[in-house]
Length: 98
Image 1: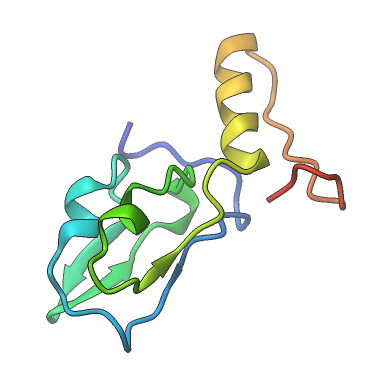
Image 2: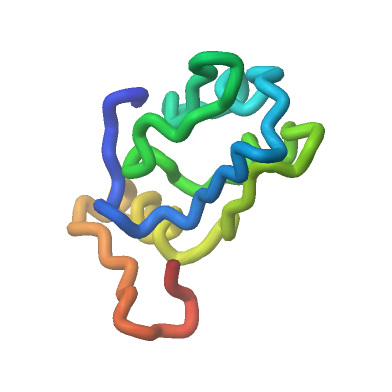
């Protein structure tokens, strides 16, 4: 699953490197290798792999990460896996969008 990309350019994950202490917990708990620690700081290396699960945010001791966990994109991906249909986040302004 680590090479799986979701919807391009819609993930809400943000990293404030000024707060990051380089502990690496975010990279450890991320199920899709979105984050890595390079030069003593976390970095988002594959944003389009992010399924917005919130594991990184919940484990960051300094609140350097933010994400709108559980928004439409993650739901759209899971729905597409179940139904075999193309994922549709409907980012045109719908109520449950990314």
